[in-house]
Image (cartoon, rainbow, N blue to C red; front, top):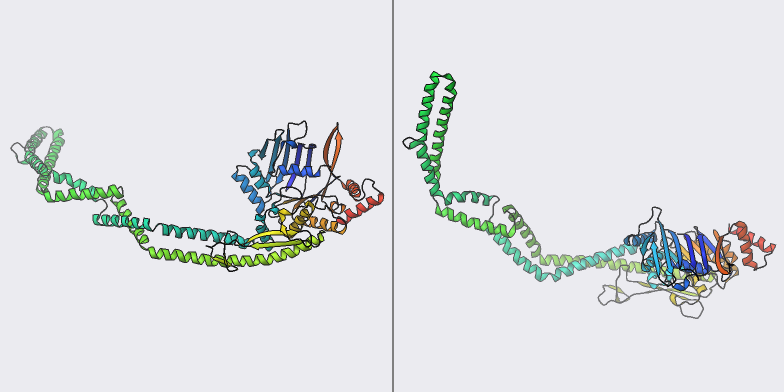
Amino acid sequence: MLRLLKITNFAIIDDLEIAFGPGLNVLTGETGAGKSIIFDALNLTLGARAGGDLVRGGAKEAVVESLFEIPDTAGGSAARSLLEEAGVEMEEEGELIVRRRLAEAGRSRIYLNGVLGTASLLSRVGERLVNIHGQHAHQSLLRPASHLGLLDDFAVTNGERTALGEMVRELKSAEEELSAHRDGVRERAQRADLLRFQVEELEKAALRSGELAEIETELPRLRNAGRLIEGAASLYERLYEAEGSVVEKTGEIQRELEGMAELDQSLGSLAEEAASAQAQLESLADSLRDYADRIEHDPERLEALEARRVVIREMIRKYGANEAECLAYLEECRSSLAAISDEEGTEARLVAERGALRAALAKAALALSEKRAQAAQSLDARMEEALSELGLAGAKFETLITHQEDPEGFIQVDGRAAALRADGVDRAQFHFSPNPGEPPRGLSRVASGGELSRLMLALESSLRRADLIPTLIFDEVDAGIGGAVAEVVGRKLKGVSASHQVLVVTHLPQVASLGDRHFRVEKHVAGERTQTRVELLDDNERVEEIARMGTGLEITDAAREHAREMLEKAE
C-alpha cells in the first residue's frame, strides 16, 4: 500500500506531500492543475525512465519519495524476495522507502531503504506493488506474458498450476538423470574394468588387519637369527657356565655377607639382597638358554615374509592408510561394481520413471487446459457485461488460448505435440475491440486512454487481484462518460477498493462522492511562479468541490444540496 508521496522540485511542483490511505482515494481538480504530474512523479519511484527536463526550473535536482507498506501476500512476498536478494533490509513494519533523485543534467539516483539501487530492480519491485491504468507506461496488464497468470487467478487454478510446475521440475530431473546415464555408458564401462581389477587385486592380497605390524616385528628376528643365537649362548656362558661366572662370583659375595652378618646383624639385609640377586641371575641365565634354543635360522620363512610385506605395502600405497582402510575400500568397490553391472536394470527403471511422470504430467496439463478454456469463456462474458455497464456497449473482449508446437513434445493438443512449460501447455492473450464491427486486437494496441482505463477497471473488478498487486491507480478512467455510466464506474471503483488501495483521478462527482479520502489538486501562482498543491478535504470542503464538479465555477445552493445528497448516499 502507498502510504506517503513526497515531491520536491518536480515540473510545476515545488514541495508537495500526500498521505494516502486504504480504500478509495480520489483526486479532483481543474484540467491542467497537475493531477497527472503527480502520477508521473510517483511513476519515477516505480522504475520509470527519467529525464532532466522534469527538474523544476531554477532547481539543481528533483526528489521524489514514496513510502510503501508491503503486505504479507504473494505479491508482497515476491517484492520482499527481490529486495533481500539485492541486499535491501526491510523495516520491522514491512515499510519500504523509495527515494529517486533526478539531477538537472538528467542523471538520477535510486535509493531503497537507503541502499543504492537500479532502475531495473525498482521496476521489478514496483510492478508488484502498484499498477497504473491510464495514459502511463507502468501497466503490467498490457504485457501478454502476464495474461495466463491473470486467467489462472480468475479460474482459481493456482493450486493446480503450482503442482504442475513441481511435476515439470521432477520430469526435468528424471530426464537429466536418464540422459546422464546414457551419456555415461562408455565411462561406466571403463570404471567397471578398473573396479574389477581393484577387487581382484585386493581379494588376491587377502589382507588382514594388523598383519603388517606383526611382520615388521618378526622380520628383524629372522634376519639376525645367527647373531641372536650366538649372543644368547655367550651371555648364558658368562652368566652361568664359565669358570668364574657371574653367578659363581655372586654366590661368593652372598656367602661372605652371610658370614659378616653373624658378626653384625645389620648386614643381614644386604646378605638377603645378595641372595635375591643370585636367584635373578640364575633365572636370567635360564631364560637366555631357552631363548637360544627357540631361535631358528629359517631362510624360507624370511623370504616369504619379505615378499608378503611388499604386497601389503603396495596395497596400502594404492588403497588406504592401513589394512582396515584397504578392506573398507574393497567393499566399496564391490558395491559400485554391482551397481554398474545392473546396466540394463537401471536403464529400464529410469525409462519407466520418466514414462510415469510424462503420463501424469499430460493428464494434469490437459485438465488444467480444460479448466482454463472454460474460465476464459466465463471471463469474456463477464468482461463484456462489465464493459457495457462502463459505457462501452458493443465492445468485444476475447481471451485467446494458444499452444506452441514442439515436434519433440509428448503432450498432444488438437492432434499436435505441444510445448510444455512450468505453467502448462497454454499461452493466453487478452484481445479487445472498443467498437462493434472491429476485430479484437491485443491490449497494447488500444489507443484511447479512457477506454483503456475502463477496460482495466473491468478486469480488476473481475479478477480482484489484491493478493498480487495491492495498489491500483486509474488516471481519468471516466473520460468521455457521464450519467448512469458514471455511477457504474464509481460503484466498480468502490468495489475494487474493498480489496485494493485505489487512487483515481476523476472529473465525475458520482465517482468523487464515493471516495474514502478526497484530495483537491490546485494550481496557483506564488511569487510569479506557478505551483501545484494538494489539499485533503474535510466534509464541508468536499461538498463545495463536488458541487463545483457538477456545476462549474458558479456554485449554487441547489448544487451544494445535491452534493450533500450524493455524499450521504455514498456513505
